[in-house]
Image (cartoon, rainbow, N blue to C red; front, top):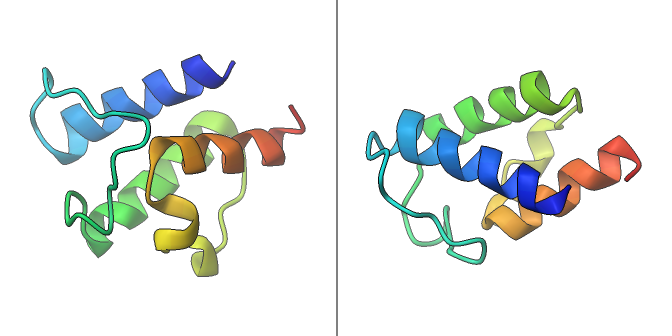
Length: 83
């Protein structure tokens, strides 16, 4: 399940946010702290996560502590899905 979540997130980020469909995004690659995604993209990513995985993301969670890597995002999603 974790690989499916990471793969789905990686695809969304590469295609919709970075507009580089063939660009790999490593599961431990910093997204926010590296400047790869900005605050506008962060909101888009949060909405995608809510719609795709049926979980609620709080505005206070849109930060480097919970949204900086695909691994962090996957863990957050899994915790909300009770996996």
